[in-house]
Image: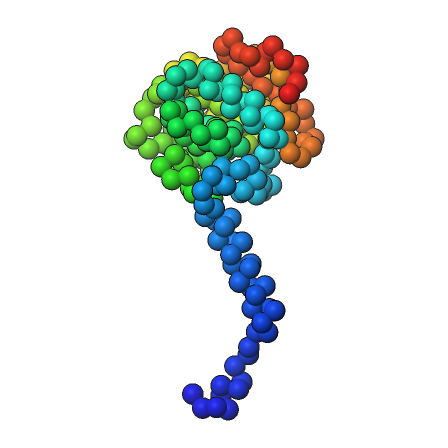
Length: 216
């Protein structure tokens, strides 16, 4: 290349180059956060197009502790469309528990072998390593408030659980949830990092600590 041709190549100022490098660094951290930070709620931003709304820190902690108590020693916990509960469970460093995250959003593949791609439209399309009735408790938060979404997610829940179910969904789904899963509404009221337009509640089919508290 001649000197004249080289002069025509656009060059970034040092300020613009630094800003660009910072942008790429932030993008890399979001796509592949390292260490314990990758379990922080919010490290992966909500995608409203996927109907994602993360729990508050207090709610995620309460649900994680409930799952640990329900699963028992060295228990197996499935988090179906409930990534913030999975993140809180792992943030607690409970390595003695087997925990899987079933999620459509492939950004959560940063969690390695514990990530299971899941599309509620194909409720039983799961890898062979996920055996039927192999989880002590299933925590599920169907992404949409519709009978179809709850019905299909319920197929997954019933396939995965040995019995215990913790469902988080809108209060308007109470009758449908009872019919499909035999769960009842708890007194505990979950909160999100953002205010939702629909009242949100928890439902269980076992004797739960969530039914002995009014709020977080």
